[in-house]
Length: 414
Image (tube, rainbow, N blue to C red; front, side, top):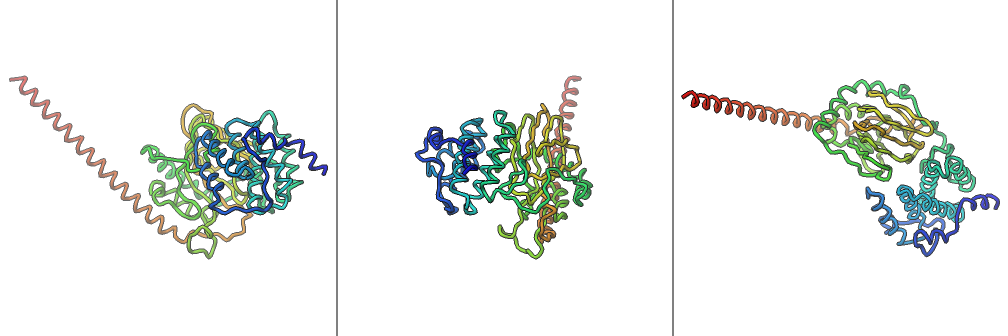
C-alpha cells in the first residue's frame, strides 16, 4: 500500500485524461485481455505509425483512441506522439494514466500487455530524462518504482530500456570493435565500398525511410537497404556489391542458424545491413532499440564536421573508415549540427556475444550475390555503351560544327 501511495504522487486522476482526449473513460482494461492481429484498433495503430508527419500521426492516433478509449496500447502511442509534437505536459498526463493502470490492473499481464507497458514506460522515462522540467531524477523515480511494482520490468540500468530484455547478457553501452573479427575484414574492403557509395551518390540514387519516422525530430534521415532478416536485396547489392560480399562472409552479422535451409518469418533471425544518410540540421530523438540481443556497428563512410552521437551518457566521434560499435538497447541520439555535407554510415546489426545460436553463412547467399554481380556487370556494360554513344554523338557534332565553320570561312573569302 505504501508503494502504491508513493506511485500516486506521480499520477493524476482519470478526469485529466477525459479533459485532454475527450475520453469518456480513463485508461483501463481487463487484465490479460488479448487482441487478434486484425483487431481494428491495432490496424489503426499500425497505419498511424506509417505516417511520416507527427501532426498526421497525432490526428490518426486520436481516432484510434476514440475507437476504444480503454485501450492502453492506443493511449500510450498517442502519448508518445504528443511528446514528439512538443506537448510534453499532455503526454505526461497520459503516460501517467497508463502507468497507474498498469500497476492497478496489469501486474499479472499477458505477453501482449507486458510488451505494451514496457514500451510505454520506456518512452515515458526517456521523455522525462530529456525534459528539463523533469530530468534524470524524476525519470529514475519512475524506473525504480516500476521495477518494484511490476514483476516483468527487469531492466538493470536507467538508460537501457528495450521492450525485450534478455537476462544474463553482458550489458554496456559501448564495445571495442577491435575485439570482433569482422572489424579488420570489413575495414580492409573500405576503399572499394566507399567508391561504390560515391558512384551511388553521383547517380542520385533514391534513399528512403520506410519506418521509424517518429525518431526524426527535424531534418532528414534515410537509408538504402542491402540485407534484412536473412535476405539480400539483389538490386541494392548490384550497386553496392563489395559491401554485400563483405557482410555475407560474417555470420555474426548476416548468419543463419545452423541447420536452417529455407527462409521464412519463423526461421529468420532479425537483423539489417543498410546505408544511412543524415543531412545537416538533423536531430534523431533519444530512443532505444527493441532488444538487448544485438549490438549495432556503424562504419563511418563520409563524415562532415558537426556530428554528435550519444549512447547512454557518453559521446564518441566518428572517424572515416572506422567502426563505432554500441548496444542500441541503451538510449541514444544523433545530432548533425553542421551546415553542409551529409553523413553516410554503413549500418549493420551484430549478434550479441552472449547470443547462444550457432550461426553460419546463409545457404542462398551465393545465388543472391551471383545474381547481383551479373546485374552489376550488365549495368556497367550499359553505362559504358551509353558513354560511348554520347562520346560518338559529341564527336559527330564537333565535326559538323567544324565543317560548317570551314564552309562559312570559304564563302567569306569568296
